Amino acid sequence: MQTRCHLSVLAYKQAEKYGKKTAFTYQKWGEKKWDTISWTEVASRVKVLSYAMLREGIGVQENIGVFSQNSLDYILTDFAAWGVRAVTVPFYATSSEQQIHFMIDDAQIRYVFVGEQEQYDKVITVMPLCNTLQKVIVYDRRVKINPAHSVYLDDFMELGKRNPDEAKLSEMHAQASNDDIANILYTSGTTGNSKGVVLTHGQAAAALIANDDALEFDVKHGRVMTFLPITHIFERGWMYLNLSEGVEVIINTNPKLIQQSLREQNPTCMSAVPRFWEKVYIGVMAKIENSSPIQKKLMLDALEVGRKHNVEYKLKGKHPPIGLHLKYKLYEKTLFSIVKKQLGLTNAHYFPTAGSFVSDQVAEFVHSLGIYMLVGYGLTETFATVSCMRVGQPNTIGSVGKPIKGLDIKFGENDEILLKGPTITQGYYKRDDLNKESFTEDGYFRTGDSGYMKDGELYLKERLKELFKTSNGKYIAPQMIESKLLVDKYIEQISIIADDRKFVSALIVPAFDMLKKYADDNNIPYMSNADLCRNEKINEMIFERLDTLQQGLASYEKVKKFVLLPEPFSMEKGELTNTLKIKRRVLLQNYKDQIDAMYN
Image (cartoon, rainbow, N blue to C red; front, side):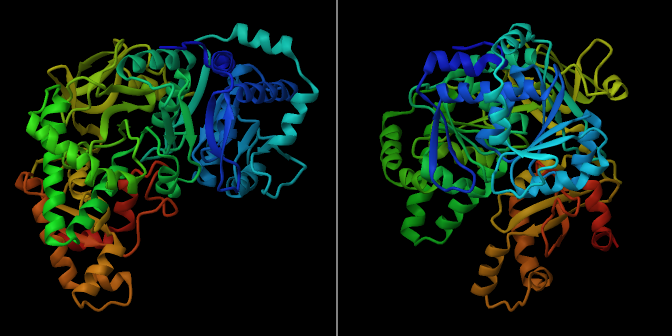
């Protein structure tokens, strides 16, 4: 690892080492044009912001909130806060007023840094209800603010420019410890209030060292795109790992524009969740399906050649036969290069992927295109990575790679994965009751996931807390079934129903653009999404596709009935977390009548 310094001084150390080298490529608030900032400029801004925090009286290990989408200002706030030994408490940009209120009160936050108008308005709404909140610092100058309790970041930094305290800041840097808390990350939680995971600088340092051992970094040419929210531990850990190596980071502020950002910037790497690749798979396969017979045959052959070359040989550390290699190289320069260009992945190196189950079908497809998907596994409590596939080493589709160095893994009751090591959290913020439940008597953290080791690689079985048991006594792993069915181009969202039921059923939100095209092509009349969902021919078509996708499942695991829903699951209705995980308990309440009808 090139830099293993404390995060409180990372910006300064990198400025000394890389100087004018680009640290970030980003878009200023409200602008489409991409701009860059060097490490020298980053260090200068961080120092001024740290001065402002000192002048404002932000104390050692005080909690400050950050409520924003991905932005340069967000990242500078992290660095500046760590420089004065403060703790940043990131909120998801989509958090509700209720969630914000809870986190501000729970962490006793006095200062919240916000991004745009939406976040500002939510904070101002709950401000009278929060006992500790004193001031809101706003990144985007387009936001309409109340100067009585709010200030723009630019003006806040002027406070630092006018009141530099180099001696105090140097003292803070000297006193910074690995025992200091860096972040409290509130998990969005599929049940009840979120809980604050305490993450220390020591955990961060251990995670950077362990992950550096597993990956390779191209400091000169590497360019990493941020896609997931920086609040998410996967993106946070991955981004700071790259910054610690001096790799340029491209900041994508609006997740809805990620495809455009990819095409404009062509990064070499990007962390992603399986759903991103599922949509890529669906899009490419839909184009193949709509191609002429000759084009379709050619593309399917290309994917098969890519699969053999990259999955059967390269991924296993073997040299492919010369004939297969030459044929693959031909497709790589023609068909695959066209697909990658459309995706904005012409410079693709490797792409870490985690967050939920990765379908073998999707993983093989991504590798077939020549994109190195590195599947991994981790939790907020483990500072992201527990295990991951290794660059340049044999890897197996279906596994989540090899455990990182320094981590002690064993398996408990029901094959639960238990962990101990320097990257594991010491516990949840002010939750002694929960901490007792979350650790074994001998100090191992309970992940709630079951798995097993084979040939040095970790394999996941199911999420124990979400394991369903049918009324016939059969155990069902809903995420595994959902991951198999989400590769269908007509399915946008799905939730498996099975707990205490006599068979498996599903709530399905169709991909309505695709479904409308099918209806038009087959002369099926409709006036609304609800009409499509009720149509008998549509339901028959969906059932046939489900039947095909479920061929590898046991009979008791297969979806026997389903309901098509005219509206998507949403955060507004309380059905999704900020990381878009399904809140199954809420769905059971919201769609009780539809579910009961399937079992009558």
